[in-house]
Amino acid sequence: MILTRATAARRKTIKKNTASAHENPIELVFGMLARRPLSEGEVKVRLLRKSIPESAIPPVLARLRDLGLLDDSALCRQLARSYRETRIYGPAKIAWKLASRGFPRSLVEEAMRDECAEEDVAAAAVLALRKKYRGGIPPGREGASKAYRFLAGRGFPPEICRRAIGRRRTETEGDE
Image (tube, rainbow, N blue to C red; front, side, top):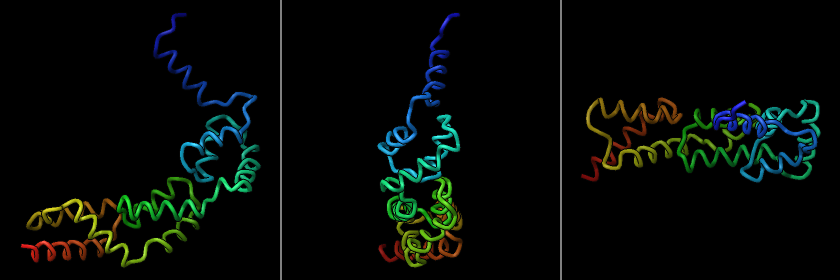
């Protein structure tokens, strides 16, 4: 059999994605957590991908919680704050991002209550428009439509999008 680069790469990927019989699941998770914080859901999915038996995962998660390495509620709040402040996402996109990281619905809702007050969301929408349209929102309905689509795509509610566009327009008119 002739080994091509593609065949060798596939074998390496398969070997990388499966845990050998002698690998300890806790050690696998230590390596995962060394790269970035993960939710319990993400750890579970990654262990399953590494062919760790599903029955072996709950004790691993319990041990990691005992060691203080997994704290879903703190991580969920931290990520919600980061998505709001750094990436300037609206509530819908923040909730979607948190759910996609495997957090339970109750934790996502709690983090959203804690981190997404309406006045903060409105200020974030205006800030997002300032960053996107430094010279002001393009004139006319087309400009407003583009700004609306931009904010809606970032997860801001319709009413906040409309208010932010109006506020940003009055800001730029006042500057001229």
